[in-house]
View (tube, rainbow, N blue to C red):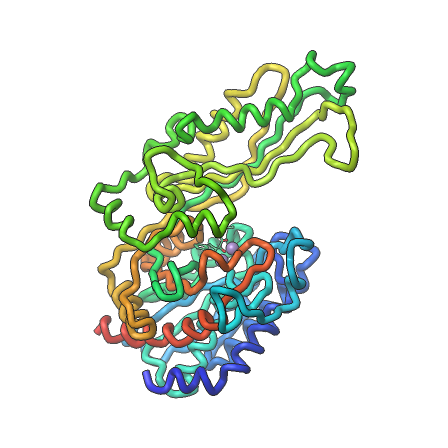
Length: 462
Ligand code: BES
Ligand code: MN
Ligand code: MN
């Protein structure tokens, strides 16, 4: 590809400003109070795809938030790349932990990002990374170098489970037909260590409710004589892990893929410093399943974590009370071959079975999805690998991630194509946390690398 660096250099300020504008819109899909902002973001994405040279762009209505679809088909005989991304973001709370307001993007230098990083909710996940594709498209069309067909599918419900997208994909298989799916919604090992994500974990997300007496009670008059739902809930949750931090739900590990010694040895070669890891999180020790390393625990092993827990009195001062109910939200990260519906069932049956007399337990499944693994000998992987090699001067390392993009396995099932996960974020970018940011260097590096993927994918497909 000719002049990519020159083009990026020439348009640097505009590329940054356009992203900053997008980051100012609070497209929080989880909170219905932001509905109009989410819809406005979809409009902005549509405009930007048109400007980037797509010839058809439409806002496709769904039961939930719309999907922005755009395409440029140059020749039916050439391969087609389908780009997926999401324009919705996580809620920014807790707000008081942000150093600057989450929807007033600012560029600040950090130790890891001396060239500056954009601080805003969605900067990395996924507006910044998705927008790299829009700008890469602009470069290719503006300089007449688009080597193949392109389709864009940008959704607004990723952070809440992609329910509408699942229907959209099933109903539009022809429209979405492609040779490879390209996503930037993951990370890489380090700025000087490019990596390609070859696996994602699945997910089962549930909410549990424990109900005891029919009203809140005086903890002196009744304490000790009736089941306290909060005591019971915490005890039940604690029993879901044994002393080795294995999950105790019967059948939970039945389908878990065990990696061979060789595969684990290969994984262990990826650069990783436990000292840095602990230091970055201000912890004295890591914690997890016996028999596995930190990198294995957060990628190839399934987990069960409480994401939120509430009940009783949490206001100022003290109130002596036994709450009638206690609640928790629990996520299970799953690995390939574990079926999320089956795991949700196993959880529900087991959790209900361990409830003592004196309380009732209700388990409500939220959403979930299957895990994903992709081979490294596919044309798509090879094209990505060559693209990174050109722009980073190093062959990228294949790496399984602990995060989830549940829709990816559905893509493979419905559209029969492999997904290539070219992420440019860093673990330290604080996605879903206060002070989320995305390195300016990473943003431009992504824009430079993506067009090379198109070039190599087209070449290798012939
Ligand atoms: N982009 C993330 C997933 C991700 C981040 C994967 C970094 C790998 C590395 C995505 O937006 C996300 O947050 N997914 C959710 C699941 C979804 C169903 C809410 C997750 O992983 O918690
Ligand atoms: Mn994301
Ligand atoms: Mn996310």
